Amino acid sequence: MPEQHWEYVAVAGKRNGKPNFPPLNREQQKLIPAFDDALNVAAQSEVSHPIYSGYRVKESISGLPAGNISYGKKRALHGEEVAVANIYSKEGIVSASELPLILRNIATYNPAIALPKIIPNLILAIIAHDPDGMAKPCGNCLDLLRDKLGRSLNVVFGASGGGEAKVAKLGDFLFEVGREHRISLRAREGPNLIATLAGQTFSEGTRLTDDAYVSKAEALSRNYNALVVTNKGKYYGGYECLCDYHPIYAGRDAIRQARRAHDYFLRYALFTAPGPGNNPPDIMYMDRQHLMEYALIGDLETGREGDKPVYLASIDPQRKAVTGLWQTSVREFLPFPFSPINFGEEFVSHFKEYYRRRKRF
Ligand SMILES: [Zn+2]
Image (cartoon, rainbow, N blue to C red; front, top):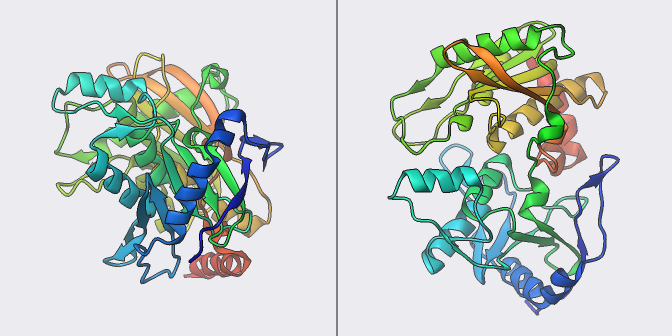
């Protein structure tokens, strides 16, 4: 395949719910030859082996090809997972930027964990399939990339044959709950209702948690429990980890309960974690992914693009009292979601009809 060149625009978050694509800044312009190289390696990558989905993802990192590899029953190593493994095998433990405080604290706490060496201008290239030309890493891959390569990782995506390509930082795909999301304990769902539910979520989630493999190097804010509230019921979730270390997170556990009841109309979700109230629970992007996809089922059924609240509460574990409360929403929580919509209109029609039929069972 001949070497291709792309025309680049940047991704600068969303304005009025739509992505905004300004010209590259000066720092990004200097990297254009490196973006071209990265996309060329991705375009020529032959790593991808998507036997179930046929959804071929071609990627590269630091000159190394990557891609998605299916196995088991519709399970896959995603291209980003292969990319991280590839660069670790070539360079050792690296990051594109300082890791978040939470991870540095873990590394300090557990001397067996080495801190990464920082490689500036690290580029992950993805050949994009989306109609809008945006490649959207899934929740699991966002968890991996933010912990292992950091927010400053450059992500470039374009079609294999050239044309327009987009440049973002990993941080553009992430959403961190800030001070502006802090709310009074008297949340709008009614005086003290959320605070009461947060206490119950902590107790129920702790009861549901199944984890014999507790690690010393854990951040309390990631030890969260979940509650999904629908028009019909309440579903609690706890963390489950077995020795293969492929855990089910608490959000997914709660959503599984709602799915089993064929109850698809989310009103809001609530997550709780122990803490003094300085920081909200740190919800894994994989759980944000499950929450978005679950909420989408209800939205497609009603034909209304609703955006449901997500409450985050830190809890004093002894008193089960709320020490801090924050509010965001399903859409804000995952700014550029990888969702059924990525597979095109025909798939979305099938997806909608599938859940309609399923509800009748
Ligand atoms: Zn992924």
